[in-house]
View (tube, rainbow over the protein chains, first blue to last red):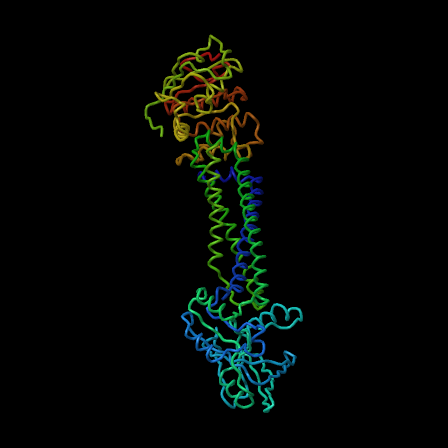
Length: 391
Length: 221
């Protein structure tokens, strides 16, 4: 029998085993809670803060005042030319609106009837250009892009309350077309609408420009100046931009949508959860160290006797280091297993709820997990060193 | 590390344990005297109870620091010996049978022997069993020390002390719970082991010599 074996006989008493189990459960709880809540936090933050930095695309309209309420709230050719000249402007595009009305009927999936309003914009201004974003004269089916905010509101607010299926981009291909009628006093046409994508940047129902040209030509009424434009700027924080917008009474569409308000609250709540998580982790750290200190102090007499029999501090400390590392390694493995399972379930759940932009594996989570283990190890190894020296 | 190859001489200079200060028997040949214990010579230290017999051995063995005066192992003051040096001395130079035995009560008798034996790579377990057999405790080796009688434990403690190499064997009333026959056998075993290693013995007792031979007898107090 070697020194390690005999020491393990001395320290692995029945009483100590219970203590170890207690410490292990404390460690597991802290580990699983910390890592999995951090994972959720990362995912939610990713989902909601996507593109939430200062946008370099902005939608600009004229402020409605008493003076321009009667129709001067549109951009004239001169206005546009002037904007185009400004040093902050990188690209400018106007919204072209349909000079006709749209009435859409649902399908078997979505039963509704509603009046719609189409706009078109250069496709370079879109955040994502769908693969089938084109329309040629004579085609019955018109691709449309709907605002991501609609989808989010539908997925997060409406669908859950009505028990309706959720929409995701991958599901769109299988989505049936919607019947619609475009009409004006010049006539009407029946078309079918196919949703091909969601747009995060532009809160409008968009159709391809070619369709807009055709429809305006066929049944459109008078051509109006655009009321809204999309401006791509070089630096959204530039002071000239701010001054220009103010001087010209222009307003930027940066009001928060309902969802981004909810997102803000969710992130705040998660921040609180994260804070509690940290408090919990510190607590579990204390529990682990306390139980380990207890184990050590209950073995005080044994350690003393070993020293009296010619054992060195190093022999005893080394054994305790090794067994503590083994103990933590074992529970870490279990912890990783639990966390992976939990994260997988969370991932599936979030995905089913239509939360996009999520990933199953988060390197930061791994870093945090390893950091936590390192902290527990370091703290307790130092404790062992200190306590064994004391006896 | 304490690496002197020379056998150690233990020197007391005017030593008194703090609890005995002011009540030392002036006839004591050890307390408050200058005295050396030479290598290869055996000493019996005798006194009635309560005169510091255990303290005497514990002070030499480095377990107690509460005394006035100086103690030297060779020329080194024991107060300057580091923990690592003490560990080395206890592995190679001094072996001890504590009066209160100090076994791990949760371990079996055999495991108690192995606690010591595992410090030395070449100890054969067979030898340990032979010695246990000689002292009549072979049949209790697999029992927990807590379930052994005091006499059985005492014999286990003696075997444990004889496992290791030593220059000086410290015996603290080692036969207090043994019958005459077992005292004879234990004394023989101790004498044989000491002779093999040319070691000295420091034994405290109430005054009996048992069956060991001593070069000198010193009154402790």
